[in-house]
Image (cartoon, rainbow, N blue to C red; front, side, top):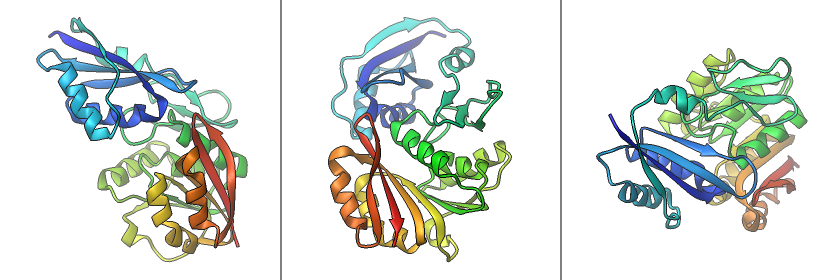
Length: 275
């Protein structure tokens, strides 16, 4: 059966959201090329029966992305698409000790491997905000600590914390699919992560709280995340554009000593210590 291959250049910050939207609109598979700079090449395999530009327009609207650049479209004949899609993804080194490794690759001989397949759910280590938090967690260390990942998505941050030796890791998301993905991915990595809907999270405070969401939800969540962070506990916030950092920090500064501690590709990481 013939297919259509659609590729386009896109801002790095929009690539993951648009790839998710393309899958929701009926793309057979998607891939993101390039890991440096401010732009990516986004590709999608589509059934030959669809209008690729109309599908892209719907996906762009669903992702809240600006009108996408004119895509490149070519007709391709049927091949082993699973193998060819897999070949697009290699292990990603996300911190000194941490790698994100697709399940069809062997883990590196040294370091800690998080086994996670691209495209399965909400965060695969390729987005700069995820890499910022992973690098922070790896540098801080989690050994013997209680960790909360609020807005867990695929569970990648929670899994990293557990693999780095956390005593307990809890993960929260409002999306049931994200909770299921987190639990599945944790089992695949041979570690334990407790996944909860927000209202079911047991009482208690944590040594480390991480939240990689978006600026406005992080502002709204400030009182809740402050209450969940123990005195002298550590906080990391991501999903924040550089120009949004002051507003987000302002929502937390009554309870935390907080500052921008890292940045990448227009995104920043806010790091705080609970007073």
